[in-house]
Image 1: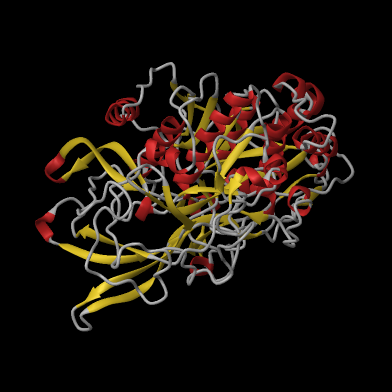
Image 2: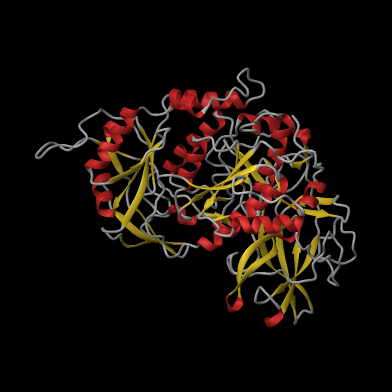
Amino acid sequence: MNRKALLTVVVLLVAVTAFALVGGAGAAPSPTTKLAGSVPSWATSANFKSSASSSAYVGFRVYLNWRDAAAANALAKAVSDPASPSYGKYLTPAQFRNKFAPSQSQVQAVQSWLKSQGFAVDYTPTNNHYVAAEGTVAQAEAAFATTFGMYKVKGKLVRSPSAAISVPSSLGTIVSGVIGLDDSAVFVTTDHVVDKNAPPSDGFRNAPPLSLFWAQYTSDYPYPDGFTDRSSPATAPWTVKGYTPAQIKGAYGISSTYDGAGQTVAIIDAYASPTILGDVNQWSDNRGLPEMSRSQLVQVVAPGTYRRPQNPAQDPQGWYGEETLDVEAVHGMAPAAKIVYVGSPNNYQDMDAAMNHVVDRHLASIVTNSYGWSGEALPKGYIKPFNQTLMQAAVEGIGVYFSSGDSGDETSVIGYASADWPASSPWVTAVGGTSLAVNASDTRVFETGWGTSEYAWSDTAKTMVRTGWLYGSGGGVSKLFAEPSYQKDAGLDLGGRGVPDVAALGDPQTGFLMGQTQTFPQGVVGYDEYRIGGTSLSSPIYAGLMALAQQKAGREFGFANPLFYDHKGAFTDIKSVKTAVARRNFTNGVDYAAGTSDHLRTFDDYSGSPTQFTGPGWDNVTGLGVPNGVFTP
């Protein structure tokens, strides 16, 4: 329901006069620069609980600026702009490195300083974008001239520098940030919604009645007040079992002419499911899709990512379901495409390194990501290095897709409206979620924005009573980034970077039928299928459909937002449809042993996100809309 992975803390630096990195005995201290934005907003005196253990492990990455970053930014825009003479003239990774990568002497300067402070220097990628190092909190306190504290935030005890960190002034023009000194990344979550209390690898089943298509079965429950638009049945229909690729493609007018052959899609998540190949092939057999070979589905761990003992609060099982969903969604849309799964060793850090690895090695031309932060309240220093990686992706013709989030405009979570990061980056295509009704002929009955309130049966009132707003497609206007030219030129006038850009099926009430090996009561392990949703579904669906579009076009689209906003007719504009569906839940999540409960779930409901709406043209729930056939510029 919102994302897991990465790490965080970073820093913007100001160059000062160069000086010796390490002074000898009795020498004057080296001049240093305090790094603004190196302390997260949650590291306050009110949240402080204790000093951090001096012997605790800390792993981090010192990021280096691109050489001539302004030129890299300009080139990324030019190769992505259909109106530019440089459009589509992408650089290879080697060409990018030769033109923009930090020099070897700059890398050596950072490495030398880190070693002089007692850190173990682990790894530097071929694009020299960062130097990974590790050591203890005591070493970090001495090197960065600060103290570290433990803070209680959102029920978690997390670590952070207590004041702005410092670095030698001689590195001021080299370093763009330091990621990993604080624990901000524990607030990253995945954007999938299963509607159960246990993680996906624990057993779960949807309770019948379950329709094979929209309104096959109807309940006796009347619609909630205000949610009766476009509803053909007199009473609320029961939820679907979960849509198949054929139903989704039918709704979006996607023919079987293209299958993604010759295309490669990368998926970035944490951990790696040990049953993924068997699960996706069983699921494929059940759908009549071709199985995947070990050469078509490749799992990779980015080099240089941390391998220290995991935080016991982390949940690798919860990410097994995320990988399975992403792989099956991409394979379902583009069954002949190659999938490269890049897993981070844990779910709280290293996603930035995984992204850098995909981009620097050009492992794919399309990358889908289903994680992020609730809002944009991050240490400022994290933003710049990650955006520089995304800039390199654009220069190389790689399209990066991010789920827009599952908590609407985040008002219900953080108390104010905000777009989510990294979906709010102007260098990614943010994918929002919809509620989709597909009939027995695999044709769209209607589609609307995903926003859901729940109604539960009340024995006292003898009717369904609203219990609150649950979730919905992430969206809003960034407070970090100005409105990019591709949105301005489309006449949106949003006042900032608007999220999302596009959309696809996301609502778990009308979700995707996924298959996965699970652990059921009494330790019974086996493959089973259940319905799942979230913008974590929307993003890989869209990535798979872009593989079809590139196959058709015979070329890579790269960072496609300027192209999308220049071809709004290629999208079906999503309008408001106020209706609801009935669903039955197993109390224990797997069978009738503990009974069941009935509920109503609304569509196109933004009561938890008052600034959101679904309407004509671009909106902050579905963006430009959903695919109208295979994308054709």
